[in-house]
Structure formats: structure tokens, C-alpha cells
Image (spheres, chains in turn blue, orange):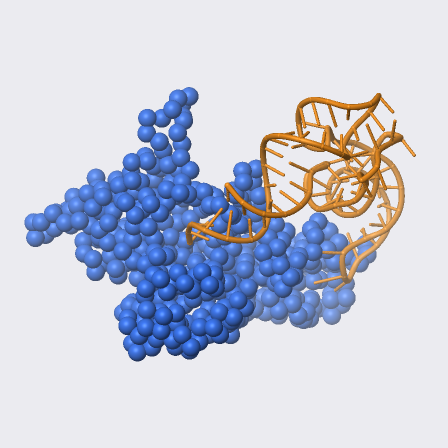
Length: 494
RNA sequence: CGGGAUGUGGCGCAGCCUGGCUAGCGCACUUGCAUGGGGUGCAAGGGGUCGUGGGUUCAAAUCCCGCCAUCCCGACCA
């Protein structure tokens, strides 16, 4: 049995780790920095896969699989790309009992190996667009790791597309940003800020990078998904060309986009409380747990029978059919341990609804129901419970999103323009939050803020045509200059 | 790679300063009985190269020297 969970206010990262370990979502592996995902955690990933895969396929992409090993020379073909990733690559130099002639990089991302195939597969404009997605594992040798948020190996989905024109590629990158935003909000109940990355934060090898940024409960930002417009950078390196309808050879325009198991960490840090995990119903493997309370041998049989009948009624009710993933309401019965302990355990593992059923309830023809996010006990007549469950699962999904959104709004601040607000900005950013501020787009000003406050430009919010929002006339918060200022979101980040 | 700390059953720790009884405690685990409306009670039981190599000593978890590993803080990052 588990220890009590460290309060959020006391030590946020300890709190987070407690929840992951005690809800049995994951564990540390013998290899430093790697993570073992336990069944509880993997079922959440399966839900994410199911739902997101459906959304990705709707955009026209198809799933495929590429090798985990990438010849070192492939990585070196795109200059920025290798520069960005080389420091964090794991490389195989020895295999089959001898030193390899060419080293093999364990993929940190698959742009290069996939492009080597794209170059063969694409001949004509009729082959375009080519849209490939793969669910895979990648390895990045980070210096410091954290369960789910940054592990040496992680699971993700990476999409890679080729298009005939720059406009199509840009549209694709934008479309995927929206897909991710909707997915994060509708399924994870995690509100996100969509935006564009600054030059220094963009993906190594991209023309531009879009991202969604979420706010955790300690008010730090978490990059939850990215979508890159790669332009023709990789096409040039791999000579991925096609014969267009005008008879000319042209380079393909590409995108890539991905989200990872980091989403699970973000979801935990967004919703959980000091009692443990809080799962949005759309991610829960069990929606409802019925805890029978058997006061004595005489009522034991009655209570167990009533529990089974209730479980059946909930699973079969018509309202349940409209719930996520077409799986209906998933009901479980737990009569294995002491009731008191069970209550804590199901709170720790995040089951959205708990129903307590004992002799006293049976006399009244009712049961006690508790929603994990609210925690208030209510006595509901047995026959009304199936409908109550269906209604509350839907409401809980919505409420979690609204609560997280309200938290983010309450911690997002518009800074006064120019240098005037800078000293105030520096003290407030220590307390955390998102800060909207004008920036002159110079690297120096970006670096200055990072150095002095540890905050980085998370993204540049976009207007309706996906361009950074100009703030002409407003002074950059660092240098005060009014040229080329755009709106940015600054925050300390994971 | 810089700054700080720690290595003792599965987990968390005490013992070390001042060397000496059979290396101890809490949780977890096993068995039995009882219990069951918010972290059950009692009883019995299993599990240890005290990180590692050397040295001092009649005697080392404890003192000395080397090595190794891990954690936290900084640089890296989805």
C-alpha cells in the first residue's frame, strides 16, 4: 500500500512523482532515464492512440512503420537537423560481434530515414500529397529526465507529409496544429495556447514550427505538441523531387508533426489533486467502481447481488451508449479489501465515479455516489443511478476543461508595453504564469529575458491567417524598440 | 562537466561520532483468525555480500585510503 501524497503546495515535482508511482502508471527502469509504463499508464496511452489515430486518419494520413536505426550519414544530410540532434543521440557502433563500418543512430526522430524512402516513392505530382504517420518509440539522451515529461525513450506519433506546393504544406502544418488543439481540449480536457515558435525555439531543420502550450498547476508551461513546416529543407538534402504537371522537376514541400507520452504527464499535472490522479472520463479504463460494503454475513449476499444488478444496469443503460469511444460505461466492482482503504485507492488511481453500496443504502433503495473531481457524496435512488452516471461522466469531462481554463486565465497577464513594465514583470514571473508581451523579434532580447527570469518565449500567438500578431507602435519589453514588435507568450517551462 | 549530499532486506530509515552482545525499526510480503460506512486488529513467519576493493585491529556497518553508483542544483530538451 502507498504512502500519502506530498501536497502540491509543498513540493510540486514530488507531488507529481507520487501520483505517477502510486497510481501505478509507471515505474523507474534499471536503465537511468528510461521509464517502464505499467498497465494503468498504458491503458491511458491506448485511449490517446485510439482517439488521435482516428483524427489523424481523417486528415488523409496513413500509418506505416520505419526502422529504429538510422545510418549516421542520413542524419548529417540536413545541416541544422544534425546540429540540433547530434548532442542527444544514442549511437550503435558495435553489432554482430564487430565494429560497424557506418554507425547507426537510434532514431531521435524519423525525418531522415523517412525521407530516404520518400525520395524513392515519389516521381510524379500524381504521387502527392503523400501523408504518412507512425506510432513509434524514439530515443533522446537528455541530461535530466522526469517520468512521462522527459524520458530517454518515449512513445509518440510522428506524421510526415509531402506536398506539391508551399501553400499546401503550410496548410497541412496549420491543420495539424488545430487537430492537436482540439484533441488536447476535447479528450485530455487540457486547454492549450496554439502559436508559432520563435526562431531559436523552432525544430532543427524546419522553416517554422507551431506548437500548443499548456499551463500546469504550478503555472509553468508545457509544450504539448508540435507541427512543423519543413519547406524544402529535407527534400533538398534527400533530393525528393517530382515531375509536375507543367513538365518541370520540383522539390516537395514537407511537414512533420507529433505528440508523445508527455501528454500523459501534462494531463496529470493539469487535473490531479493531493489525493492522487484525476482522470478525464474519456481517458479512464474504468469509469465507475462499485464498492460493496458487507457489514455482516447476513447482508453480504444481498449487497453483492445488488452490486451486480447495479453494475449491469449502468453498463446497459441507453444514456451510456452515447459516451466516448463507443465503449459505453465501463463498470468495475471491487470487493477485495477494506472499504476505507478502497476509497483512498480509487481516488489515487483516478476512477471518475465511485459508488458505495451497503446495507444501510439497500434499506433506502439507494446508493452513495461520488465524483472524483468534486468529492461530494450523494445518495441517489438505485433506479436513477445509470442516468446520473451518464450525465455526470459527460459533465466531469466538461468541468475539468473549464476548471483548467479558468486557472489559466487567472494566471495569464498582459504586460505593460516597453521597458516600463519590465521590473514588475521580473518579479511577477517568479510567481509563475503566462505573460503576454510585445517583443521586437531580436535574439538578444529573447536571450536577455531567458537569462534574467528563466522564462522563454513559449510561442507567438496567431491571428486568423496564422501570422504572429503585430503590435506596431508598442515597445519591446526588453529594449523598448517599437520596430517589428509582435505579441508573445512568455513563461517558465518544463 | 562544475556545486552539494547519500549508499544498511522490496521501499523508507536508525545504528557510525565513542569499534565488541544474534545488525534493528516502520511499511510492504506470507500464513491463520477476527474485522468491514474513510488509510483494520491480533498472532506467527520469510527475507541482509551493511555499494565495492584494500588497510588498521584480537574484533569493522562503525576508523583510514581508493574506486563505483545514485540523487538534488546548473548547462541540454517533446
